Length: 577
Image (cartoon, rainbow, N blue to C red):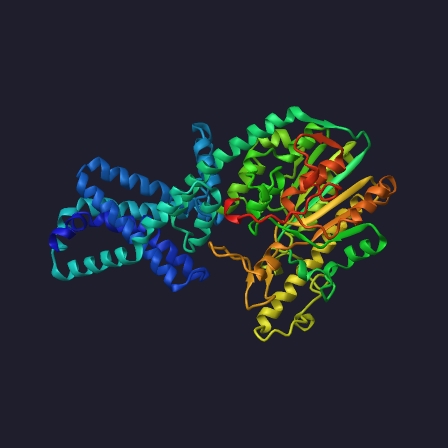
């Protein structure tokens, strides 16, 4: 036993400092503040940290090179400094975006950063903690021989043995987890990995590994998508010379069965219902999202692939670029990017939509800031761009919609807090006041979303305009069991209830009076398509048709409004997207 403990007894300072720099105190403090993790998750987190520290000690003992131990310390201190500063300054951890920024930063920018931020409270906190750890490291290594002799004590060896055993039992599973991360070749599984890693906050190693993996995998896919888009730009033409505004609104987490348009009570969409009754709006009844995860949905929606035919988004062109090549001004007003871009799971989507080459090819302009509530985004576009629009325009709005928690998606005032517990009509036995309030909040968010969508309609009411609106995916809101949200699926089949509430979505088409007058036959034709089975990854085809764009990517069989449309009923696996 004594022999087995030698690598640790002779590296006690390294072992202790490693656990500190790997975040053992930081995750404990974070848990104390926010109570985000279960007890079992915290035990696994502590076990993983102890296990990693043990590996560093073993490597140092086997190699027995002082410079190697110094390199271990330098590595751990660097990632700890970065992670701590990010947390104190921006309440975030290491993410793919941060790693990319660091990789692209030159000496002049580093110098400017220190001049600007070295005297901020976040820097003071980081410096204080790092200095304490650094002094402890120096003292520990200086007295390492003395400490090692003290560790010969029987009781201290027992404590050390139990600590190491704890790390092996609860932390060795990290080997399998990290192997799974680096063995996969799909960014989707990287996102699943970090989401399932419930204790990722304040643990720099896990975030760093995820970031490196996500950058590598996303980079390969984006490169393929950019090349495909560039090739297809040579085969695009416009056959429409009329002034036209096409508006695409992509919402968020919208449960179709909480929409007044689909007969939900209380009526959460009175304004859209009014437009329907006037004859300017159609609500489609058989539309599904290709997935229940935003990043995967939008990559498949914004490219020209078909998930039912196992086509990958990155082997297809980015359709807004084809619009721009055809002479359209393309505006992207995205309320999620500016407020969500530091979350690790948002990287794989934003790295596609905001890739430098894609931005050159696809957009005329994008918004500069995000807003707490979606109507602020619409007002921003109204004030800055509406009066300056050109002859032909594609305007894409990406909203927060009804993203949970729903009570954060509408203003906290009496005008917008319309529904309460007493308005919830479900009699399900599993509902209590808390869950009923969550339902009421969701209905209020849906009512506010109706107001936002109506605002967009009003912007284009006196123009030759047609609007398409759908969310990325659905959401469960205590509909059939005592739970809400979306769930990460394993290899098991998706249940009919999950399909109904997480994949079935509202799909709305609205037009101005001017557009309807010019295209009355087409509007009547659209009205005959309301029950067709359709998946939103094929939305580009109906947009090409409406825009009068001629491209080899257009497939009438995938165009919801085409007489040649083929219902999209072929099964596919969401795990291949």
